Amino acid sequence: MTSKRISRMKQAMVQVKKTYIPFSPFQDQNGYAGLFPHCTYITTIFIDYIDHIHPILDQCISALPAHIIKWDHSFKVPKYLMKLEGAVTFTALFTLVNEYEQIQFQAFVPTKSLAHIRTGLETMIKSLENHGHPLPILGFTDNVASDYTTFLQCIPSLGKNITAVQLDEFSDLPRLTLLSNVDVRVCSTETEIQQACSLILDHVNGQELLYVGFDMEWEFSTHQFASSLQRTALIQIALPTAVYLFQVFGLKRFPSSLLVILK
Image (tube, rainbow, N blue to C red; front, side, top):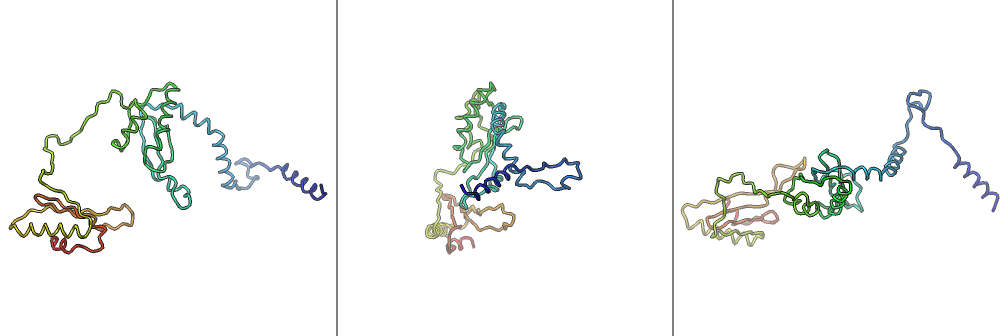
């Protein structure tokens, strides 16, 4: 071993043994004179601390009760996450809390599909049983129709002693239905719309008085700079024996026969 290499090793050992003066108390005006540790230093300490107490936090969460639960997807937090080769990795953050607003289960999910959280829900139920907690008896969500099946499969206690109730706010009024002789036709191409409009014009020309139902639908945008005037997506025309749905959003040219009807 050369003398230069030995000298470098000694220097490295000296650098390793180098000590740093700790930060002075906040009240000490003769200390660092208002200087503070860099944000990277604080971040590193915080991450190291969280990694250290991670098992303890998991144990504390698993010991929480969940007699009444509520859950939802949040789409705000994933917007601040790093993208993978320009693509968004997670689209939502799923959170489930108990009756005390304590988080019982939380996970980033690639889609809103409940298939991504089935294992987590089943594990949560096993944890409640292992800790002697009662199983959930009530759940709150803003999408009951979509979440109902999955949550009953993962948490069967939610379905015990439950009688389904079909709520009808206007039960005293007759239900509006289309007659059996009314045909609903969806037209998406220019040719289909032209042919349907020709039939409508023939029907109109044969009568002196004809009642026609008319409505339009258009794309909706919640962007702060969006204009209130959006491009028409669907035109609906209803006749006594036929209802026409014209999908005009993707057309390059407005059908001339439909223009005649509108005029």
